[in-house]
Length: 79
Image (cartoon, rainbow, N blue to C red; front, side, top):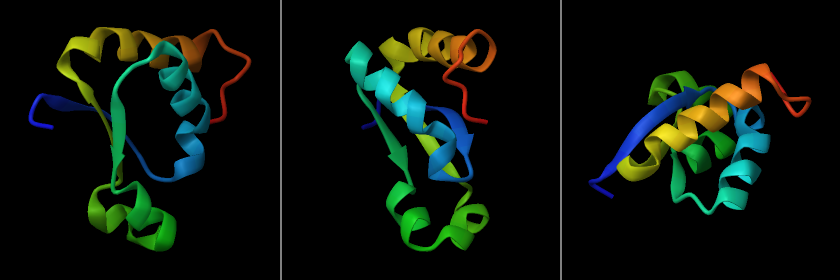
């Protein structure tokens, strides 16, 4: 896990629901740090620093492109 870097931070799980599916479809290794804790105690999100999307360094550029496409050119955007 030492080669994983934080790409983006979210406050609540619904903010990245579609992104999670896109990352799985692309076969990109990722995990959301603090996801379980915020799922159990939603008000802890700010205290924990949010839910961090971490990906392997080799996938960083591709993930940033997916996030950009999702937020600008997609009908799948949630937030």
